[in-house]
Length: 158
Image (cartoon, rainbow, N blue to C red; front, side, top):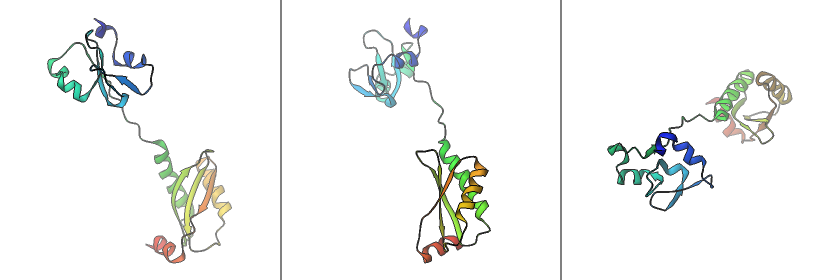
């Protein structure tokens, strides 16, 4: 039968819409809600979890049922890289007592914005940007969050 020749991804790739899928009962659902595809000629289409339970596809061991393959979730690289950049920037600025790096975000140009707080404006920001840029191999722009002195001091020395 068809289920021996094709798998779920074949039927999924044949859809006109990248987001919507027609279910076996005729209604339209989002592709993320689908758990499988039924190749039975009288009601072929995609199955949601509810439809799969109603038809007992898995319990019956139905040979028309093609399960949606599980996809391994890949952690967002920018979050991991962001944490690494904060660690590197914090290491570079650790000798500067009145400064603390809080976070790093990548802007639309691919540059990294390293956001920091300070209780003084006397730090060599350009030199720090250059050191962090050299350490990570990408352009870094330091952004002072301009917290008031009391709040900055509380966060830096806490």
